[in-house]
Length: 280
Image (cartoon, rainbow, N blue to C red; front, side):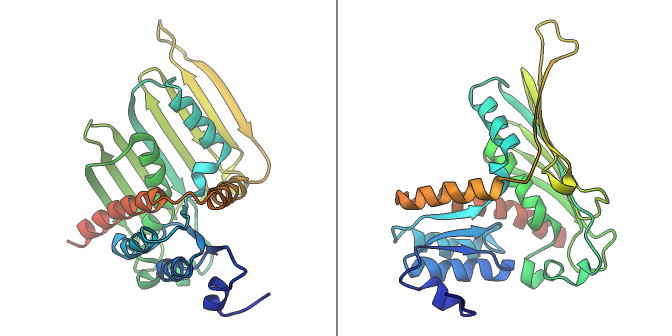
């Protein structure tokens, strides 16, 4: 069945799960409607424009047996999954800091798209690609108690930022130094994780971002040049399929959890702090 009525599709009795892939202004309303219709939901990042919009979604999930995920697909890239595996077995030692950059160069007419409208997108590059970096940094370092950031429009003629610079710090003084940009004339993804015993570097996302690669630099007892291991993941990006399969499995098992929404809300709170600081 094909329909242009999203309400009819999201509430159809033969529909078990709903994928919400709209502009940011519709993410929370459509997700909330689907939850109230008793559907499992995979909603694209950032899940909403503000943490307050997401609070209504969280409240609805707490009263229904549905599975709701926010689409932070970067967690499912094979290089990132391998990095997480190395981190979890303790090979990095205690983490010290993360340094990450993520950007693209836009396209003709980019300043006229919905992402350039603050009412529709909720912001610019920070809430678009930057929120992926925030989510990944939280995945490894946990909550950030101190947020410092700067947003600026350098190139595109639009009312939202094309660059965002963040310095996030945990209660234990671990730092995430993040830069998201849509003036990156050669598409770039670089995510470095520094521990006491080793460093991980995830780069490339496939396609125009270059071959996805994880490099593991293991510090030797005598210091000097590290022992280096490289994993490469050529071919199409499998992250969306892997994410959807994990979501479908959780929905089938009726795994009711607010963790994904709470992670998205925490990331949005960081975005909101930076925007409010910029507006002050």
